[in-house]
Image 1 (cartoon, helix red, strand yellow):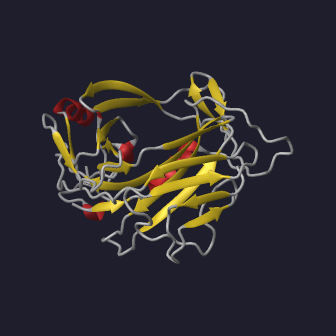
Image 2 (cartoon, one colour; image 1 turned 90 degrees about the horizontal axis):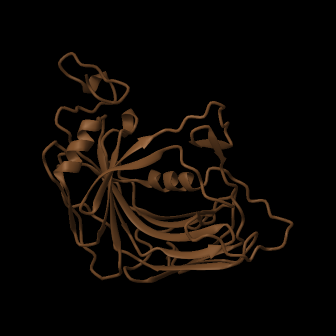
Length: 323
Protein backbone atom coordinates (compact mmCIF):
# COMPACT_ATOMS: atom_id res chain seq x y z
CA UNK A 1 0.00 0.00 0.00
CA UNK A 2 1.40 3.36 -1.00
CA UNK A 3 1.88 5.71 1.91
CA UNK A 4 2.65 9.35 1.25
CA UNK A 5 3.49 12.39 3.29
CA UNK A 6 1.01 15.23 2.86
CA UNK A 7 2.49 18.70 2.81
CA UNK A 8 -0.85 19.93 1.40
CA UNK A 9 -2.30 19.39 4.91
CA UNK A 10 -0.07 22.16 6.10
CA UNK A 11 -1.59 24.62 3.69
CA UNK A 12 -5.08 23.23 4.16
CA UNK A 13 -5.03 23.64 7.95
CA UNK A 14 -3.58 27.13 7.60
CA UNK A 15 -6.16 28.20 5.01
CA UNK A 16 -8.95 26.91 7.25
CA UNK A 17 -7.47 28.99 10.05
CA UNK A 18 -6.92 32.18 8.09
CA UNK A 19 -8.40 32.99 4.71
CA UNK A 20 -7.63 36.70 4.44
CA UNK A 21 -4.21 38.33 4.41
CA UNK A 22 -3.01 41.66 5.68
CA UNK A 23 0.27 42.34 7.46
CA UNK A 24 0.05 46.09 7.51
CA UNK A 25 1.11 47.57 10.81
CA UNK A 26 -1.47 49.29 12.93
CA UNK A 27 -1.03 52.88 13.96
CA UNK A 28 -2.90 52.20 17.20
CA UNK A 29 -1.06 51.27 20.42
CA UNK A 30 -0.19 47.62 21.02
CA UNK A 31 -3.18 45.70 22.35
CA UNK A 32 -2.16 43.95 25.57
CA UNK A 33 -5.58 42.59 26.51
CA UNK A 34 -6.31 38.87 26.71
CA UNK A 35 -9.01 37.15 24.66
CA UNK A 36 -11.13 34.01 24.85
CA UNK A 37 -9.04 30.80 25.12
CA UNK A 38 -11.71 28.95 23.11
CA UNK A 39 -11.22 31.21 20.07
CA UNK A 40 -8.33 30.00 17.90
CA UNK A 41 -6.85 32.97 16.05
CA UNK A 42 -3.36 31.78 15.19
CA UNK A 43 -1.25 28.70 14.62
CA UNK A 44 2.46 28.08 14.16
CA UNK A 45 3.01 24.61 12.69
CA UNK A 46 6.28 22.69 12.71
CA UNK A 47 5.64 19.68 10.49
CA UNK A 48 7.73 16.70 9.50
CA UNK A 49 7.20 15.99 5.81
CA UNK A 50 8.45 12.46 5.18
CA UNK A 51 10.44 11.39 2.12
CA UNK A 52 8.24 10.29 -0.77
CA UNK A 53 9.52 6.97 -2.12
CA UNK A 54 7.19 7.13 -5.13
CA UNK A 55 8.62 10.41 -6.41
CA UNK A 56 12.06 10.37 -4.82
CA UNK A 57 11.42 13.69 -3.08
CA UNK A 58 13.53 14.05 0.07
CA UNK A 59 11.95 14.69 3.43
CA UNK A 60 12.11 18.05 5.14
CA UNK A 61 10.68 20.03 8.05
CA UNK A 62 8.19 22.80 7.30
CA UNK A 63 7.43 25.79 9.50
CA UNK A 64 4.46 28.06 8.78
CA UNK A 65 2.41 30.44 10.87
CA UNK A 66 -0.23 33.13 10.83
CA UNK A 67 -2.13 35.20 13.40
CA UNK A 68 -5.45 36.93 12.70
CA UNK A 69 -7.88 39.24 14.44
CA UNK A 70 -10.56 36.58 14.84
CA UNK A 71 -11.56 32.98 14.30
CA UNK A 72 -11.90 31.70 10.72
CA UNK A 73 -15.46 30.60 9.88
CA UNK A 74 -16.09 27.18 8.35
CA UNK A 75 -18.11 26.52 5.21
CA UNK A 76 -19.28 23.17 6.62
CA UNK A 77 -21.17 22.37 9.79
CA UNK A 78 -20.18 18.97 11.19
CA UNK A 79 -22.71 17.13 13.35
CA UNK A 80 -21.87 14.03 15.38
CA UNK A 81 -23.84 11.03 14.13
CA UNK A 82 -22.35 8.16 16.12
CA UNK A 83 -19.60 7.56 18.66
CA UNK A 84 -17.75 4.37 19.56
CA UNK A 85 -14.67 4.17 21.75
CA UNK A 86 -12.16 6.86 20.85
CA UNK A 87 -13.78 7.64 17.51
CA UNK A 88 -16.63 9.80 16.24
CA UNK A 89 -18.48 9.71 12.91
CA UNK A 90 -19.73 13.13 11.79
CA UNK A 91 -21.87 14.25 8.88
CA UNK A 92 -21.49 17.61 7.07
CA UNK A 93 -24.14 20.14 6.14
CA UNK A 94 -23.80 23.32 4.12
CA UNK A 95 -25.71 26.39 5.35
CA UNK A 96 -27.65 28.39 2.77
CA UNK A 97 -27.76 32.17 2.48
CA UNK A 98 -30.30 33.76 0.14
CA UNK A 99 -27.93 36.67 -0.42
CA UNK A 100 -24.46 35.46 -1.46
CA UNK A 101 -21.77 36.29 1.09
CA UNK A 102 -19.17 37.23 -1.53
CA UNK A 103 -15.46 36.52 -1.45
CA UNK A 104 -14.79 38.22 1.89
CA UNK A 105 -17.27 36.22 3.97
CA UNK A 106 -18.81 32.77 4.24
CA UNK A 107 -22.31 31.48 5.01
CA UNK A 108 -22.12 29.95 8.50
CA UNK A 109 -25.83 29.52 9.27
CA UNK A 110 -29.13 30.06 7.48
CA UNK A 111 -28.96 33.55 5.95
CA UNK A 112 -26.00 34.41 8.17
CA UNK A 113 -22.68 35.53 6.69
CA UNK A 114 -19.48 35.87 8.68
CA UNK A 115 -16.48 37.81 7.42
CA UNK A 116 -13.08 36.20 7.16
CA UNK A 117 -10.56 37.59 9.65
CA UNK A 118 -7.52 39.63 8.66
CA UNK A 119 -3.94 38.55 9.27
CA UNK A 120 -1.97 40.70 11.69
CA UNK A 121 1.72 41.21 12.37
CA UNK A 122 3.02 40.02 15.73
CA UNK A 123 6.49 41.33 14.98
CA UNK A 124 9.58 39.23 14.39
CA UNK A 125 9.05 35.61 15.40
CA UNK A 126 12.00 33.63 16.73
CA UNK A 127 12.08 29.83 16.47
CA UNK A 128 14.46 27.82 18.64
CA UNK A 129 15.05 24.10 18.95
CA UNK A 130 14.57 23.56 15.20
CA UNK A 131 17.86 22.95 13.41
CA UNK A 132 18.70 24.29 9.97
CA UNK A 133 20.69 22.38 7.36
CA UNK A 134 23.49 24.86 8.02
CA UNK A 135 23.65 23.72 11.65
CA UNK A 136 21.99 26.67 13.40
CA UNK A 137 19.56 25.84 16.20
CA UNK A 138 17.41 28.94 15.81
CA UNK A 139 16.18 31.38 13.17
CA UNK A 140 13.82 34.34 12.86
CA UNK A 141 10.80 35.01 10.65
CA UNK A 142 9.08 38.23 9.59
CA UNK A 143 5.57 38.33 8.09
CA UNK A 144 5.17 38.34 4.31
CA UNK A 145 1.58 38.95 3.15
CA UNK A 146 0.43 37.92 6.59
CA UNK A 147 2.35 34.63 6.60
CA UNK A 148 5.34 33.55 8.66
CA UNK A 149 7.85 31.09 7.23
CA UNK A 150 11.64 30.63 7.28
CA UNK A 151 13.43 33.34 5.30
CA UNK A 152 15.02 32.66 1.93
CA UNK A 153 18.17 30.61 2.28
CA UNK A 154 17.05 28.80 5.43
CA UNK A 155 16.19 25.14 4.87
CA UNK A 156 15.27 22.56 7.47
CA UNK A 157 16.26 18.86 7.35
CA UNK A 158 14.11 15.82 8.15
CA UNK A 159 13.78 15.72 11.06
CA UNK A 160 15.01 19.10 12.28
CA UNK A 161 14.76 18.22 15.98
CA UNK A 162 15.18 15.32 18.38
CA UNK A 163 12.38 13.54 20.16
CA UNK A 164 11.78 15.24 23.50
CA UNK A 165 13.91 18.31 22.66
CA UNK A 166 12.52 21.71 23.65
CA UNK A 167 10.97 23.76 20.83
CA UNK A 168 9.80 27.34 21.27
CA UNK A 169 8.29 30.11 19.17
CA UNK A 170 8.45 33.68 20.50
CA UNK A 171 6.81 36.73 18.95
CA UNK A 172 8.30 40.16 19.64
CA UNK A 173 4.87 41.80 19.43
CA UNK A 174 3.23 44.02 16.85
CA UNK A 175 -0.47 44.74 16.75
CA UNK A 176 -0.73 42.46 19.81
CA UNK A 177 1.48 41.96 22.85
CA UNK A 178 4.54 39.66 22.72
CA UNK A 179 3.95 35.98 23.43
CA UNK A 180 5.88 32.75 23.66
CA UNK A 181 4.89 29.16 22.87
CA UNK A 182 6.66 25.99 23.99
CA UNK A 183 6.44 22.27 23.28
CA UNK A 184 8.77 19.33 22.53
CA UNK A 185 9.96 17.38 19.53
CA UNK A 186 8.43 14.09 18.40
CA UNK A 187 9.71 11.12 16.44
CA UNK A 188 8.68 10.78 12.77
CA UNK A 189 5.48 8.77 12.33
CA UNK A 190 5.36 5.51 10.41
CA UNK A 191 2.10 3.72 9.58
CA UNK A 192 2.77 -0.01 10.04
CA UNK A 193 -0.67 -1.34 9.06
CA UNK A 194 -0.81 -2.10 5.35
CA UNK A 195 -3.56 -2.96 2.83
CA UNK A 196 -6.28 -1.47 5.02
CA UNK A 197 -9.76 -2.44 3.88
CA UNK A 198 -12.81 -0.38 4.83
CA UNK A 199 -15.78 -2.73 4.60
CA UNK A 200 -19.22 -2.95 6.17
CA UNK A 201 -19.41 -5.18 9.22
CA UNK A 202 -15.66 -5.09 9.83
CA UNK A 203 -13.55 -3.33 12.44
CA UNK A 204 -10.60 -1.34 11.07
CA UNK A 205 -7.36 -1.74 13.03
CA UNK A 206 -4.72 0.93 12.43
CA UNK A 207 -1.16 0.51 13.71
CA UNK A 208 1.82 2.85 13.74
CA UNK A 209 5.35 3.09 15.10
CA UNK A 210 5.43 3.82 18.83
CA UNK A 211 7.53 6.72 20.16
CA UNK A 212 10.83 5.87 21.83
CA UNK A 213 10.24 8.45 24.57
CA UNK A 214 7.15 9.37 26.54
CA UNK A 215 6.63 13.00 25.53
CA UNK A 216 2.83 13.14 25.85
CA UNK A 217 2.19 12.90 22.11
CA UNK A 218 -1.27 12.09 20.78
CA UNK A 219 -2.47 10.36 17.62
CA UNK A 220 -5.22 11.85 15.45
CA UNK A 221 -6.86 9.72 12.77
CA UNK A 222 -9.17 10.92 10.00
CA UNK A 223 -10.92 8.44 7.70
CA UNK A 224 -12.67 9.99 4.69
CA UNK A 225 -13.71 7.70 1.82
CA UNK A 226 -15.82 10.17 -0.17
CA UNK A 227 -13.83 13.41 -0.38
CA UNK A 228 -13.35 13.30 -4.16
CA UNK A 229 -17.08 13.14 -4.66
CA UNK A 230 -18.13 15.70 -2.08
CA UNK A 231 -17.58 14.56 1.50
CA UNK A 232 -20.51 12.58 2.88
CA UNK A 233 -19.01 11.97 6.30
CA UNK A 234 -15.81 11.23 8.16
CA UNK A 235 -14.52 9.33 11.15
CA UNK A 236 -12.12 11.11 13.51
CA UNK A 237 -10.27 9.46 16.39
CA UNK A 238 -8.02 10.80 19.15
CA UNK A 239 -5.78 8.35 20.96
CA UNK A 240 -2.79 8.12 23.24
CA UNK A 241 0.35 7.32 21.23
CA UNK A 242 0.25 3.59 22.03
CA UNK A 243 0.86 2.15 18.55
CA UNK A 244 -2.61 0.91 17.62
CA UNK A 245 -6.29 1.83 17.48
CA UNK A 246 -9.37 -0.04 16.30
CA UNK A 247 -12.28 1.75 14.62
CA UNK A 248 -15.50 -0.07 15.45
CA UNK A 249 -17.42 -1.81 12.67
CA UNK A 250 -20.55 0.19 13.53
CA UNK A 251 -18.79 3.42 12.52
CA UNK A 252 -17.17 1.85 9.46
CA UNK A 253 -20.49 0.47 8.24
CA UNK A 254 -22.27 3.80 8.56
CA UNK A 255 -19.44 5.63 6.80
CA UNK A 256 -19.49 3.23 3.84
CA UNK A 257 -23.28 3.46 3.61
CA UNK A 258 -23.06 7.27 3.42
CA UNK A 259 -21.20 7.01 0.13
CA UNK A 260 -17.77 6.52 -1.42
CA UNK A 261 -15.54 8.08 -4.05
CA UNK A 262 -12.20 7.41 -5.69
CA UNK A 263 -8.90 7.23 -3.82
CA UNK A 264 -10.32 6.81 -0.30
CA UNK A 265 -7.69 7.42 2.34
CA UNK A 266 -6.82 7.54 6.00
CA UNK A 267 -4.68 10.26 7.56
CA UNK A 268 -2.70 9.53 10.73
CA UNK A 269 -1.05 12.41 12.60
CA UNK A 270 1.25 12.39 15.61
CA UNK A 271 1.22 15.64 17.56
CA UNK A 272 3.29 16.86 20.47
CA UNK A 273 1.45 18.51 23.38
CA UNK A 274 0.15 21.79 21.97
CA UNK A 275 1.73 24.95 23.32
CA UNK A 276 -0.66 27.90 23.66
CA UNK A 277 -0.71 31.58 24.55
CA UNK A 278 -3.48 34.16 24.79
CA UNK A 279 -3.48 37.49 22.96
CA UNK A 280 -6.23 40.08 22.54
CA UNK A 281 -8.42 38.29 19.95
CA UNK A 282 -7.96 34.77 21.35
CA UNK A 283 -5.61 31.79 21.43
CA UNK A 284 -2.45 31.08 19.44
CA UNK A 285 -1.18 27.47 19.22
CA UNK A 286 2.17 25.87 18.50
CA UNK A 287 1.66 22.49 16.79
CA UNK A 288 4.53 20.08 16.17
CA UNK A 289 3.31 17.18 14.04
CA UNK A 290 4.13 14.31 11.72
CA UNK A 291 1.35 13.34 9.28
CA UNK A 292 0.99 10.53 6.76
CA UNK A 293 -1.79 9.65 4.36
CA UNK A 294 -2.39 6.09 3.21
CA UNK A 295 -4.86 4.92 0.58
CA UNK A 296 -7.39 2.31 1.71
CA UNK A 297 -9.50 -0.10 -0.27
CA UNK A 298 -13.30 -0.23 -0.25
CA UNK A 299 -14.96 -3.31 -1.78
CA UNK A 300 -16.63 -2.38 -5.06
CA UNK A 301 -14.72 0.90 -5.48
CA UNK A 302 -12.18 1.16 -8.33
CA UNK A 303 -10.30 4.45 -8.35
CA UNK A 304 -9.20 6.16 -11.55
CA UNK A 305 -7.65 9.28 -13.02
CA UNK A 306 -8.76 8.55 -16.59
CA UNK A 307 -10.68 6.01 -18.65
CA UNK A 308 -7.43 4.13 -19.18
CA UNK A 309 -7.60 3.05 -15.53
CA UNK A 310 -11.02 1.41 -16.00
CA UNK A 311 -11.84 -2.05 -17.36
CA UNK A 312 -14.88 -3.93 -18.60
CA UNK A 313 -16.47 -1.06 -20.46
CA UNK A 314 -16.56 1.25 -17.44
CA UNK A 315 -15.42 4.86 -17.58
CA UNK A 316 -13.83 7.25 -15.10
CA UNK A 317 -16.44 9.40 -13.40
CA UNK A 318 -16.16 12.87 -11.89
CA UNK A 319 -15.79 11.30 -8.43
CA UNK A 320 -12.71 9.40 -9.72
CA UNK A 321 -14.35 5.97 -9.72
CA UNK A 322 -14.85 3.53 -12.59
CA UNK A 323 -18.51 2.90 -13.38
